[in-house]
Length: 154
Ligand SMILES: C[S@@+](CC[C@H](N)C(=O)[O-])C[C@H]1O[C@@H](n2cnc3c(N)ncnc32)[C@H](O)[C@@H]1O
Image (cartoon, rainbow, N blue to C red; front, side):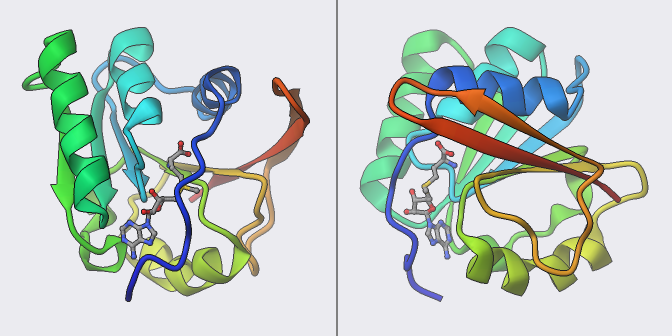
């Protein structure tokens, strides 16, 4: 699959609320499929003491992630995979963060259902995962608009 979803970063405050809503605990593995410049991964590692793994198809964005990890000294805690988010094995994840669009969420849902372990959490920015019922939904004020976050528990 090619990168049909453009790069639009989740604002920092919204990303923090996503990670809080997912109740990320120290040492847990947070995976961001379509990680962009790894803003969510960096917050998961630096604010929540998680291990972060991004998956990104655009090599320029992958490079930006690596440069940020190096600059911030996150080696061994933050990782970026250059590739297609549909090729990743999500069984390692405790938390998955999504900002992809409902159509991609729908395509990804069967894979997440198959691979994620019981009790893992999925938080999705602005777009529902069709076919799943959210455990909770919150609205967060961003710099320019209100953002909706959906929480699912496997
Ligand atoms: C809306 S941005 C979200 C960025 C980041 N997750 C955030 O919330 O700040 C979506 C990202 O997904 C990437 N992407 C789109 N299709 C992809 C695919 N098939 N595999 C990996 N990355 C993909 C895009 O390059 C883009 O950076």
